[in-house]
Length: 164
Length: 170
Image (tube, rainbow over all chains, first blue to last red; front, side):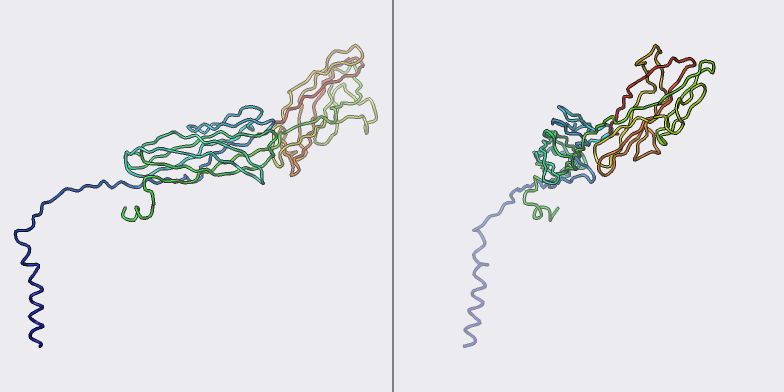
């Protein structure tokens, strides 16, 4: 009985080896993939889209220039002399020399239940430099309602970058 | 590189939050309460020019030259101008007054007199002329003193002037 079982095992192993010759052919194909660094965005520490210190009066707007952070007011809004306005700032990292699009949302600044709307302004596209990094800045327009209460208003908005 | 694809669902896109801020302050305003009053003055012609100076900090009047108080020294009715300022709590502001003003005769045949060295002093920040400080209630008071030049022989009369005062946030 033991001898019969051993013979069966040997037969099973020999089957695939006998089938191969003459029935298959292999050629090398080509495959390619380009791996790019994922794009990432970081809000620069300390940067803020600041509309400065102002008196509301009968209302109006404050516009902050995205390129230099300078502020100006319209309507009855008055920026207090010497007030500092500023543009916000982000650093984008990713694949060197790649272009990307920039989208920033509108939002509100709030204080103690009071709110004001603002829109944001950034350039539409950016290009990562040779080291895969670039900074872009964000300006905006704050709409100040008539007789808006005094307060220290803060808020956030979203900035999204996407590879083109 | 190797963990990036699994760490990000969409490696071609990234989003973060930016910050925005704005500060609204109460508008600053000023109201005149008391006039700058040099009281009654006697100007003796032979004695040459004189002057009366009101010190805004102490409210006291001092006389020089031919100008003498024409009243009891304790109550000549002299006073610095007084203004009430209101605005944003705790904020400092700048006070602007003319260097000098012309005082016109209301009665009598006199010619205009000059008040020079107008000096505004804030109640909340007396150590810094020309700078005021609103308190925690957003209030301050400003006194303005000055020096009235009284030429010798100035005719008797009543003289009056307005002291314009401008306050602005700085």
